[in-house]
Image (tube, rainbow, N blue to C red; front, top):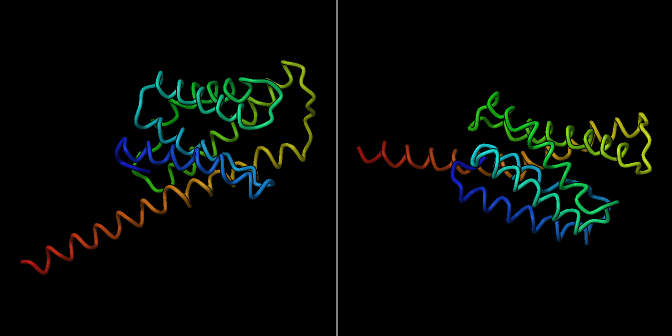
Length: 174
């Protein structure tokens, strides 16, 4: 996870580009690219700003994807952010596994809230074991794996390399 606000901006830019580009080449890939930057924003901005970002990301996804109604994902991401924002206090910002775990929790909660909203708004939806297994277990694992591979690992390797280079240059200098 990045340590500065600039890293969050780069993460959102990368996620938006992946959201626009990947479905045109791989239509079967259903990874939620905007969830990891949303989870990162929990650690950088206030609840009000994180809620606005979640609403904007959800509305962006609603406008890009074919969803049942406009603001369906916007309201889902907003509700999920409001629920999970306080959970960030139980995870360290600098831990390697934090982004993957929080992305998994966000994705599971968003799937459950989407099902609840779909039932409340009378959208065609049925609870099945296949839906439960795929949307509440497998897809969140893919989202978490994406978060770890594209956001946590590069940051980890960069800081490891920088720390190793910095200590090597200072040990030889003395």
